[in-house]
Length: 135
Image (cartoon, rainbow, N blue to C red; front, side, top):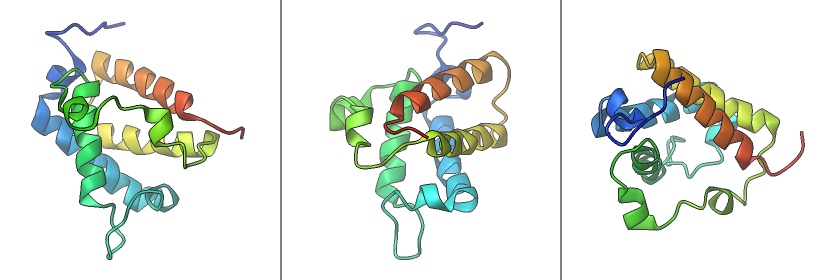
């Protein structure tokens, strides 16, 4: 299995900041269309779309998490994923819904091969780590 390095990170393999931001946008678009129950857990606009701020924070986080600039940490501090998501009960169904959304977003952007295998595994690890209730 491919092992990322500082010079060969998922961030660089995906195409840099703009590509990662597009992936994050597609992720939320897929969520709104295919997993409305999951989308409703986010701040929504009056039109029922996931708020721009939530989208931008996730994109900023994802850029750093994938090996790009650590601008999220500079702006918001350590991600503390479980703490920040503690108000939401994350069970198996929610974990799987989140993973479906990210999988579809990666499909839409043609993420394949070694980087896809790596990301599928890493996203699954993090999604499982986020579970805070049985079921």
